[in-house]
Image 1 (tube, rainbow, N blue to C red):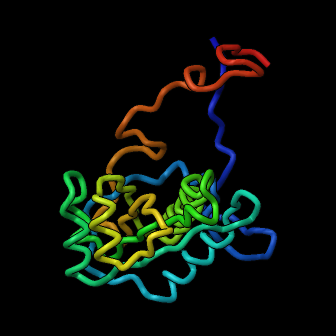
Image 2 (tube, rainbow, N blue to C red):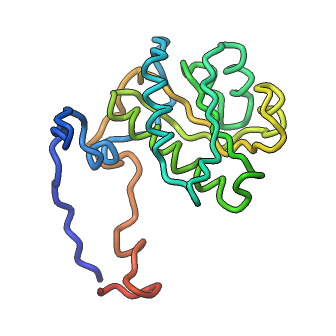
Length: 196
């Protein structure tokens, strides 16, 4: 059995190399939860642009950057996006981020690239006190028609985004849902090898 101890390598806020105070990335990952209940408070456009900037900085295969993000704030459109089986809460989320990938520009990698960029938005939102929730439950053709998404683009995922009504109870680190032990999810050099 792999003996791995969890150590506290961060403090909630740190001064980065540019002298800016921000939440540590490890802390953002540990404290992030899927939020499905949001305050009706709108998210400032200036903050949405910051989230777009962090998505823009994401790595992509051959630096193609095959992404396009639609920030949906219109109540009627959010209601339409919420019609899928597991997406009902999108109607009350102040923002729905629709992550699209250009399948013509990057046929093999657009899904991976858009997903990485969306996760940048998730972590940036957590660092600013906002909540998010990944949504994969949607009818792509309906989303594309509603938002006038061009044929070459595919809808990869939706993100609910907004100020949480309340923080989920429990300790940081996904205590609400137990996580697998590290020795169940990692190997060294070959699958199933637990020493490196």
